[in-house]
Structure formats: C-alpha cells, structure tokens
Image (cartoon, rainbow, N blue to C red; front, side, top):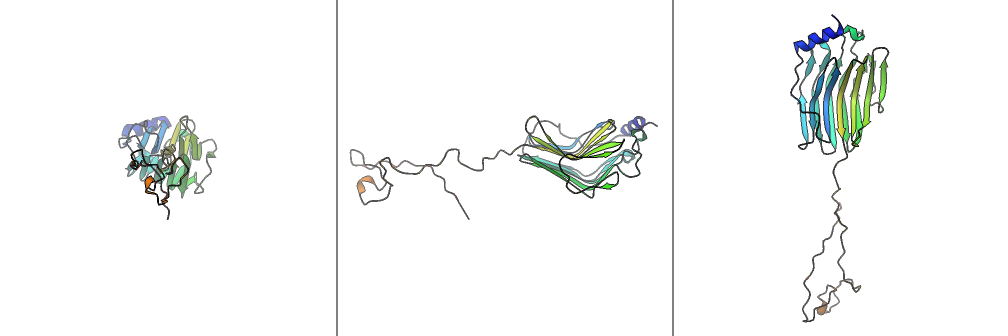
Length: 249
C-alpha cells in the first residue's frame, strides 16, 4: 500500500480528537498540536483570551499505526501570556513508506516540550528530546534548524513576529518532504494591557497662589491653610486635592 493509501486507511479508521475552538479571536492563544498535509489535525487543544484566561487539556492523543503518540497536552492563555506543553511525545510516520523516512527510531521524541510567550517575549524548552536519535539541548536558540537529509526538516524554538505585532513561538515545527507539516506546542501573545497602576494625571501638591506654604502661622483669619477669608470674614470651603502616596516596605 502506498503512503497516501496507508494514510487514507488510517483516517478512515478514524482519528478522534476532542472538539476544539476555532483558532481565531483572541490576541493571546495557544495549542499543543496542529498538522497539515496528508494528516490533518486542527489545533488541539486550542485556547484564546476572548473570554478571559482559559486553560484546556487533553489526556492523550494516539494516531493509528503509531504515526503519533502524545501524552498530556496542555494549552492556556490570558492577558499578555500564552503557554502550551506536551508530555511523552513520539512522532514516527514510519508506517508511511512513501514519505521516505526509513528511520529505525522515531523522527522526533521527547519526555516533555513547552512553549511560553509572555508580554511579547517568547521562549521554549525540550526535555529528553531527540531528532532521528540525535539528542537535543534543553534550550535551543530561536529558529534552530535541523535537517534529516532527504527526509525532513525540524525547527526548534521557532519564533515569528506576526503582522499585528504579536509573537508566536513553536517548540518543535516539522516538515516532511513537502507533504506534511506538524507544529508541536505553540503559543502566541501580545504585550499585556497594564498601566502599572500609575495615575492617569500627575498628582498635585496643596498650596496657595501667594507662595504661602500652608503652615499654621497662628493667624486664624486664614484658617491655617494659606487661603484668605472672604469679605464676610468666613473661612473658604476647603477644596479637596487628589494626591498619590507611594507605599514602601
């Protein structure tokens, strides 16, 4: 059976995935796996911050004929942050001989992978990971490319700046013979909406227009506030002044 035929049989047998939200809407979003090509998997589990901070998990995902085997898949997103992770990852695709892999070990394997994006800053990590049996460092520089000659290309810590200014990081991105792509642990974020708690206008300091510092000079005619009494000898009504007190310690 050809690779395409074998994959068709796999899909006919059924790849059951939990329902997932549409991958549009929020500024901050994340998913654990997405596949395009002969094998198609919608972003799963997918979350965004359209309705506030959200988190979803899938306990396990297995594709027939051991094409893919993934343990716990997590995704979460909120204001200015997104995160996704996968445990116990194996990507084989060896059941499809026409893809030309011919590997005696999984194309990609890892004990855990993770993508983080916070306030526009992206990072990713892998643990116990290998590509075609070659061990990988825990943290790779952005857009580290690994070629499996004539078979596949793998990009670690793939980082992209999107048109809207957001940043997307994908822990592992795989392309196989221009027939299949697979993104594993992906997160997209923008800078958080946070003014740091600062007042919108600078605080003002109480005082008077004639240079008096407002101290009590013992003259009751000015009420000790530096303001003059009115023509009837009555003290003016105090005017509240908004201020800001820095709290330390």
